[in-house]
Length: 310
Image 1 (cartoon, one colour):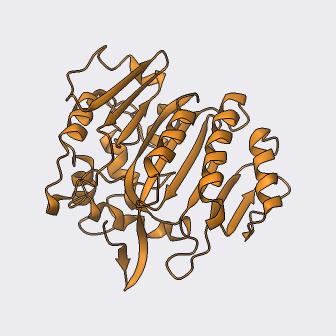
Image 2 (tube, helix red, strand yellow):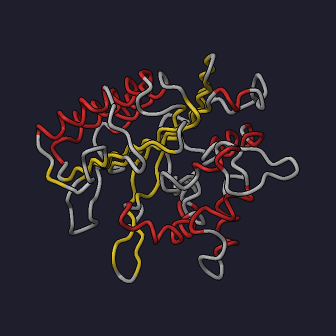
């Protein structure tokens, strides 16, 4: 397992198994409420004993972190079932209180609306958690029922929201860990749809999916830009549904660790197949990981991350 990402001799980000989902609609869409509820139930059933902190920024709630209790979890579950108290800046965050490592740390669950037509969900847990693949399959099963923009599951690095200002460090990990999911939850949302970009679309620039993972979900708005069939390695599982495409790179995720010469041919093949719906490079360069002015070498690092599976 990779070592944590350090900054000034302190831990900044932890290796994790991550799920980052961008769903088509607000949290009060009944289909989204049902899917998010199933993910929440699986998360709490599996990791509830490790949780210590909850933050609910809803109408009538400030979002001030408080201790996790059975009542707090029940209240949150009821809100997910019928989220009728949405407001600007709304969101839910649920994590541990392992302040020795990070405040707060994994396991981590985050839910929030974005713009008026997206629901963002993140789950990050320890990459060596027991029965991890079974948990990943449970989450994937719930995602497969949701109105999808795009989503990805796989190994990556968890940067707490409290450390968002350090997101410029993350692409430095891509040189070694080629398949790691490195972006923060809210980082790519403006490039998923043309309406939400602060940049002008020029030439043949088009919106695209957030990232490629071990398991990648592609929603209906991108499907007409993809071929009807793919020539992919035998270990790539393709699930073609009426309103969703799900591609899985092998039986289990890998880090793509260059120093261990891990085979990432399946990831590269999926990335090539999904090239027509790749995230727009100009937006990635301008806005991801702090943008190209965050450090003297940031533009090169963002470019290398963008092309890491080419």
